Length: 395
Ligand code: RFL
Ligand code: PHB
Image (cartoon, rainbow, N blue to C red; front, side, top):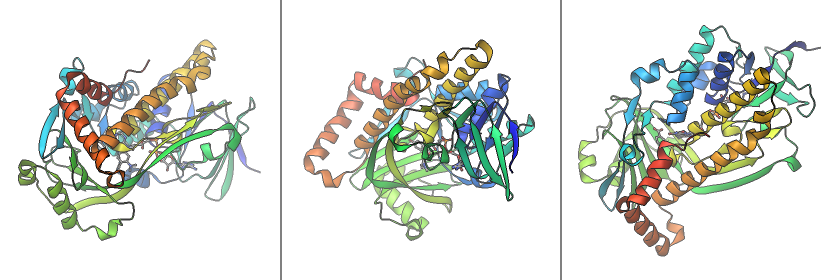
């Protein structure tokens, strides 16, 4: 027989979505537990996002987890688009009435959230195996899991599925109740992290004849670079030297000259995908973050969408417990999906604009050149890019 207990909200997954939700609920006096299949070190070893929108910064502050972000995050007021061998600045700040983005790594966000959770004495069960959400269509949902060979069961009011694209929450839903919308791109991103100063103050998104490249950063002494690579490439076959050589070929002469190279501290290949699951609510279970949708990283939207989903979800639970209203939970899926699809559109558009698609032929390339020229020379087009890049407001 499993051990049992009752906790109002069970959160599956201790990525940024699950940890942020846990903290927002705690601040509102709603008890919760997080079940995570990996170890804390494993969770922290995943190098992912680097750019936070205003909405994400605000939610981290509301969660009481923004001290390090506010001390060490870098305010970025613009980005550069490189094409035809020349860089063009998009003035995010000027075009959006003073908005900006924060360069602060997902690893750091996750660590900050873990630390405040631990300091408050809240429970996260790491290495929880075979997590199974059950009976979420009834008024009495349960979640089962195994830890150290023992079976446990938690009875709850709500389940939050924050367990990423390969998690157990979405997988538990009967196929006829869920619709999937998906687009897979014919390339991946090879990422490299190094303790070298960034090549430029602002991020450079490069469209070159040899494929896309991105020059990003984590701090004034740590850089993050990406290259568009074929899906068939293996990370073991990319030496650091080959990476730096290829990156240089995709940059403009000034950046090539300034680029400081050094040994990689991480290198990995990620495939690019657009994906949405509809709806995002199944009775008393709610999907949030990558469990419900994936965007290609070109628009820097994935982590930010995860944050806004849990922002809506926390608000809905607060409404339920404090005001006895189900309005928020009834609106959750529709409200999230409106925002999700706008980020899906933007991420797909940025990906299409900046990458090489040789299989699409010369007409596609010419239209892409025209669009790049339009984006940087039309105030309306630059404003549209800037407005989406800094993030649409949460209604
Ligand atoms: P996560 O981070 O995948 O966390 C899910 C957690 O759930 C756990 N889990 C389970 N736990 C219990 N039982 C199970 N059965 C479980 N199955 C899984 C996992 O171990 C994990 O700890 O999802 P979450 O929290 O929704 O967060 C989403 C973000 O991680 C993701 O959207 C971003 O990283 C995407 N992304 C970017 N987003 C941005 O906003 N800005 C960026 O600049 C940006 N750059 C990127 C990115 C993603 C990238 N990759 C590798 C895909 C750059 C890259 C290269
Ligand atoms: C990153 O720093 O990892 C990063 C930044 C911007 C993106 C994607 C990834 O669009």
